Amino acid sequence: MFTTDTLSGKTILVTGGGSGLGLSMARHFARYGANVLICGRTEEKLVAATAAIGKENPAVKTGYYIADVREDEEVGSMISKIYADFGELNGLVNNAAGNFYCPSEDLSPNGFKTVVDIVLHGSFNCTRHFGKKLIDAGLPGAVLNIVTTYTESGSAFVLPSACAKAGVYAMTNSLAFEWATYGIRLNAIAPGPFPTEGAWKRLMPNPQVEQVYKQRQPGGRFGEPEELSHLAVFMMSDMAAYMTGECVTLDGGERLQGGQFNFVAQMMPREQLKAMFGAMRPGKKG
Ligand code: HXC
Image (cartoon, rainbow, N blue to C red; front, side):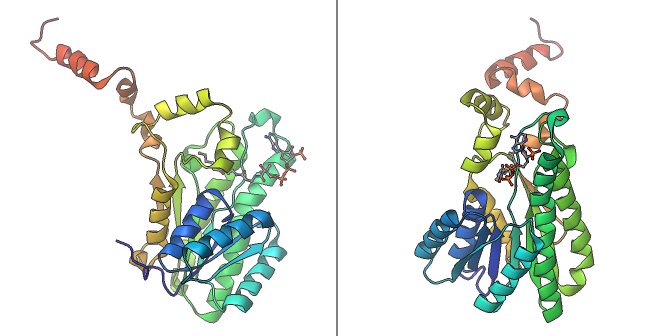
């Protein structure tokens, strides 16, 4: 489906692109022809990630910027520097995030603020600077926001993240309409469980929790970063030129846990279930 031309002519910035899903998406954007820039707070990670992307994809341009997305001035300077270095920027992936488990009654105001600052204010800061440059130049572009499957449902123990991601979701839809007239598309991906080091060390306290979590998955597995990255390539490409204001869930069906009789699927092996259901058919004895 994709070729090395799929994203050619595009320059895409991935926030938090030094590791995890951000790095995986950055690698795939480069593989399919985009110039790829990443930003984050830790230079060491950014240097290693940029070198890896460049080594795998010598035909595209790569670069990194040290910036904390919470700081509007830093973001503004970064976007100006990108224009000075590369002459353009037509794709933005708001991937940088912060999250930790905490019973909400124990959350400090600063704990709540910190996550909301990174996720919601950070995404706004990057999107506004990115969009304003395009609008001033009369050029089109694409924004992809990484939200979560608990954007709509909410979730226990990650209140600041749930509130912030819901805000990013609202921003996606609001600007998709408002900026459609400028040819700027905004979409989102809501990933389910993707085991990356950063997320897992914060959200999986021990192997038992991970095991229970895996058993909850209707397909019995977590997602692979590559699967999410392929979706991101499509959504950032011109193949998706008419797609805006869309949030695509990629969770192997995890969010559908609430179906009234879904619990039965996980109670016993399928053959045993079939026997049980068979025995319940009218006219069956036993
Ligand atoms: C309670 C906590 C806490 C914890 C921090 N705080 N960790 N409170 N429980 N585990 C509080 C601190 O006490 C402090 O409040 C405030 O939060 C700020 O903490 P700092 O450590 O000073 O902040 P900072 O250094 O800016 O770090 C931000 C961070 C950190 C969010 C806390 O974890 C981080 O940098 N994370 C970035 C990467 C990340 O989180 N990735 C996971 C993304 S996963 P006080 O009141 O003491 O001053 C994701 C999707 C989930 O988002 C999908 C799941 C499947």
